[in-house]
Length: 537
Image (cartoon, rainbow, N blue to C red; front, side, top):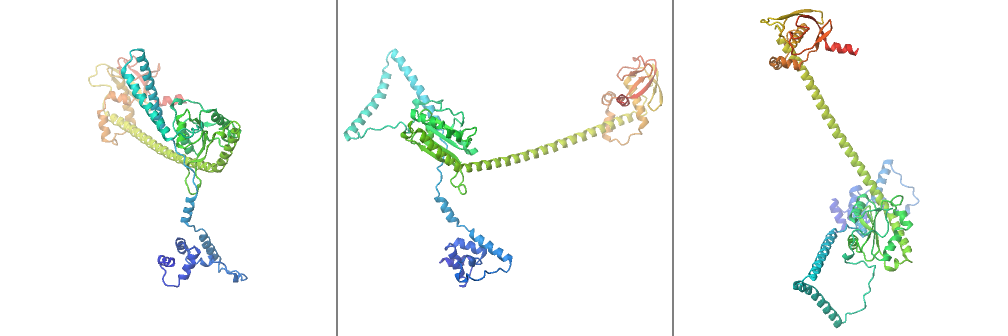
């Protein structure tokens, strides 16, 4: 099936009258069926004339006038949409051909286990040596001699056999040239020093002792990570010292005012540090010094997500780090690193700003959530406070009603002069409204009962029989004893002897025990609230 037939089958066109239009549309898109279908379903065959080559015969003719401005605008939109059609397959193919930056992985933490194993082996060897020394001082044991014989003889025999085979087969070859700056594949634990200082002071730079911590911080905060490895040779350490002390290095990475002052720097000696050796193994270092620049960037940020990548690494041969070439080599390295930083740093700055915006958005969201929670808490507290106030108001109303019901219960009772009273005292009491009460009081009556009698009289002056109190509160009032009443409802007035003026305090003492009341007397009723108001005035 031809491309035109496929086009007609997909679009549902019938007949041969559309073959020419379909052929022209396909020719415009270089027979790309996907783009032609997209153009057809977008604007049909209307844009074919706009995309056809101009006719030279009509050069001198007047330009075609559109019937309206709307038509001109629609035609311009059709042309613009066609120009924006992109072949996604071609774009993906071109993106796949673009080189990408090498990935920068974290180093394995297995070297910690190896360090522990070798430390244990060293301790064991020392113990064995001490045991052998003790045995040599004492009686020689045949067992130890046999063990040493079995350990030494097989190794010696293997070396002799290996040398003999090499001699017979002629594999002597040329003498092996050892390069002191070659990165060793195995670590010499005899030189291991967990606290070995770097070959140069790094107080002016951002330095973290642990590589993986530096790696994680550089990845999360979008800053650069510069790694410098050296060995125990004098040339290597002197080169690293000259590199760090270079003024250009200081202007780039100084943590106070450097151009890239956020850069993290990791300098270590691979001869003494097992971690530095693991870094060299992970990143396939061949020569020392080894210099590497790592950043969370991408070669094409529009299509490829950023990741921790290696932008620069150098394995320096020995003749480049000699004293006479050390300065020029350092300058070349710093120029290369400076150019890469200048090219890729905008990505990190943009990522940092995006991260800050996300952090600000998170903080704003957190503040909104906190404000919402605080609002709910305030509403809850207000509701509790409102309920407490309502409960207090109801309790106060219930207390007043219980008092009214209790006093109403005493209506018609003679509280001052029981029928069987033998010893009495005549007491005149003047109420606040001017009414005068003359009572024959039993001397065995307590002062509290006298106060209660006066309170009852005051209640009867203002209150009609109580009929608006609930049955529940009436029951409570009926069960209330006088002692409970005295405690729950303190008297709001005082009985005062006018001359000499003296307050008769309420209490459980009897009238006969009171010097002022035992032989009779005149008393005034003074409200405590009125006294307080007088004092304030």
